[in-house]
Image 1 (cartoon, rainbow, N blue to C red):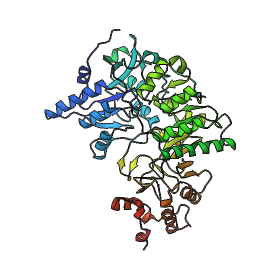
Image 2 (image 1 turned 30 degrees about the horizontal axis):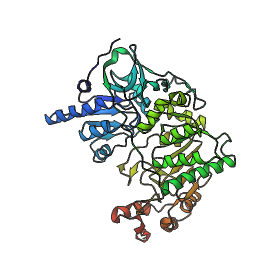
Image 3 (image 1 turned 135 degrees about the vertical axis):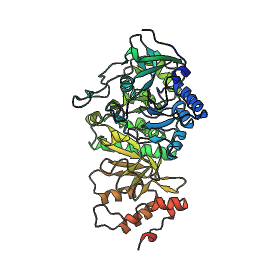
Image 4 (image 1 turned 60 degrees about the vertical axis):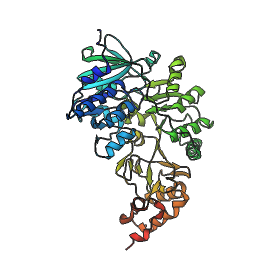
Length: 499
């Protein structure tokens, strides 16, 4: 079948006010760019005429500037799910301009299939190749593309020449059946392939192909510093010690790691520690650091949803595909993040916290309990089901004005029941097998910054010691209240809360 070649503007004209659109990609990798940028212009033109124009957007995770950024500034988004990182989108959400639904990434595709969020009118999918019979080969990410291609009324394909066709075959496309007919997902090691290298799309649904040459809008993360290096080393030392005492099998276990400079520092430290054998990754994103470790032989295999790498790194993968073809696989997000598979494989999860409280509850999404940062992403998918769940963060922020260790987190994303290990540059708090009071002692002594230790100990004394989980409820968010009042948690005076 010959598909209709159209411009990005023509494709955008097919999208009407009130539509729900589904997008390929996972992070800026593999995300549609040309049509969404053109759609922002449509919104601006309609708004100038006094007409409403907003759409709902369903994605695998965050997108790039040409989607979340441009559409947010054009006030073209009514509803959006799940994860995002764009600063203009974040500002719009926290101003109450966008209805944002923060969903576990493993659940996004199935909630679309179950009809929880309404129909998908149009799917916009980035591909490196499209065959006449509707075989669609994705670019640098899996995301929720298989589901939205099947569920959408219409499909628009962005055929992006910036992605080499040498990447064809990296993907393993698999959709589980819905209940009550779902079977086990037959992945027993990270390198197992269970699906097809393409998405089969009904050719009649493809209403247009937009030819582009638009590199991914990759994000570069800040360089490592002494704090992140120390956190990374603490993680490596902890895992090496657990390996030595037999808690971790001698073959080691697959790792999941989040995104950012701390994650890069952790992976760098693990790569340097030769007491840890070469290991595998079963994760949602791979960064430049992992690609380097694959080249060095320190990472044997990488199963992921997204190549969240710089464009230079991605080009290197495409050029060396003979080397990488049997060392990488790209999966849909409901498979890369699937709780069943995570628990079966015994994943060690390593994610980043904004703040941690004395009993091990973690806030990874909200500033001050009310302002959205990015979203929970896939951290909950892995944390709740991990063999060992680890959270990392610097012990303080904003030149010491904020402590990451607080009496009670201002928002809970991961409860104390799911968090095994907390690691800052100060040290490691192993919470396994400990009561709440024992966890509090481990966290204060090992993870809190010295400037805050006494303040936290004073809180525990005020809270008393008889209850299972001691709290002075009237003061539990006192450090947050002081930050809002004076801009510095160190000024907290517990005497103000004592009657």
